[in-house]
Amino acid sequence: MYKKALGMLLMLNLIFFFGTICVKGIVQNRQAAAPLREIQLDERLLSDRGDKCMGIMDTAVSGQRVVDVRLLERSDSYHGDGYHLGSEDLDILSRIVEAEAGNQDVEGRLLVANVVLNRVDSEKFPNSVKDVVFQEEKGVCQFSPVSNGRIWEVQVSEETDEAVERALEGEDISDGALYFVARKYADDGKVNWFDSNLTYLFEYGGHEFFK
Image 1: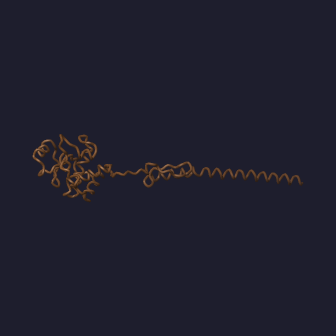
Image 2: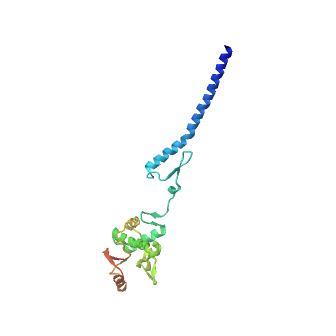
Image 3: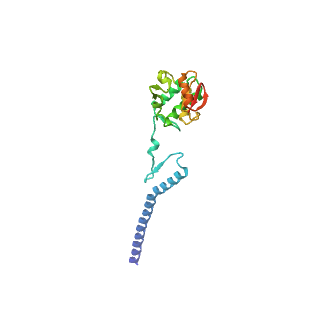
């Protein structure tokens, strides 16, 4: 009788011991699987939300999120929807707009900015604001404020800043104009060349626009 009771007690101890090992293993397996479930949950959330709020994100195996390095990049140049300019080009664009149309309303200034940017886009002209503004043909500057140095004398106004910003954001009211001239101030030879070789578009604020 004694031996039988001792055998049953030993068996119960063995059952308890192996049961403890099994339970511990189950808990460990659940803990190990938790990051995977979190990753799957994160992926579903990102799929549902897209990148509207957080941008493109990766999830590490540990369950930690790693932000795509592209989201941390910052540019020191002005950028809009239409153009990305460095500080030098932005300064030159603002100065030429002020020098050419500083006595006009914002739309008149916007038109001058449009012409400069249209030239940057055109295969007929250089591909930077600086090169467009300072371009010369047979020793003659394309813009009179460059030839007489006035481009460096102007103080850029808030209206010009607004016009330039609108142009850089993609607003173009110029119908693709590549040239403009103030007929009453230009010499006859230049005006005749405009009339003979270009397509007249419209007049605004004392400037006639062509392409």
